[in-house]
Length: 319
Picture 1: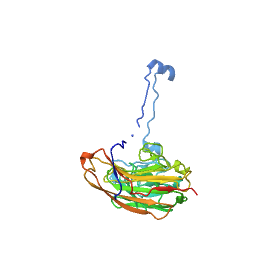
Picture 2: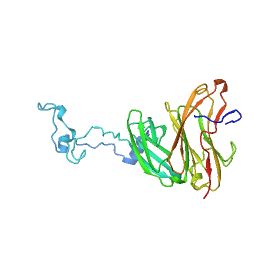
Picture 3: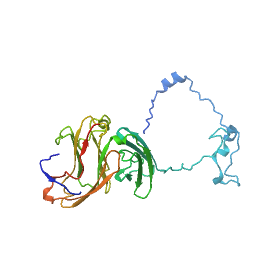
Picture 4: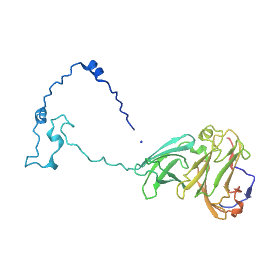
């Protein structure tokens, strides 16, 4: 991403086939292998009643009711499931919606959703004021890893037609991490940027969606990472970006500069766009702030808006 054209804003709010093969052999070969006699032995043909030891009804039987004949009633026990009638009923469909949660390192929570009758469906996940939209797989499953914002983390998963479920899990160690959330609706081009210890744009310490890192960095106290949540292809998606920094276990003292940025695109140009921020420091109460921004006209497409003072920078001081 180029940052040559930036407009700095000092403040604001913002499917199996089976093959069958065979070999044709000559009559001479067959005679050698199976015997040279050309005589065909007589085969005694017995009526099926005598062979099976049962009497089958005939069409001349005036008492015959075709619809009431069950195949297994004419067969001895041991055939077709001990003479039990065949069932053609389909098994019941299990449409129960369930969810489970597992705590990972860096106070992250892995959520698994099972909704067998809701494949390829939009589902919104709610957690402590944070909301984002995902889409289930064809089989109705979904796995997503979410940063916890509360030690007793409660997640609600809601489908568009009102179906849903919830799950709760206790998260240890959350107090060692600071988190900042920026969330919005639609493809508005918002981005959350963190520049650790004075890092320049594009350098190792610049953390954003194209250089997001993973939780292992924070688990070791080496730096922060960014989590990007939400399915942009969903209708009217709710999207969120969360920056996590291990303030309680950081190896260095210093400052992490935070900013919210937005590219001027054909979608948002000339519009007023909104977002919301959530800030969690020392596992304390979440601080929320609504953001509103007037995007310049479409002649500025390609430029970036940088909002520097909307988020409080993280100050890292090792004890």
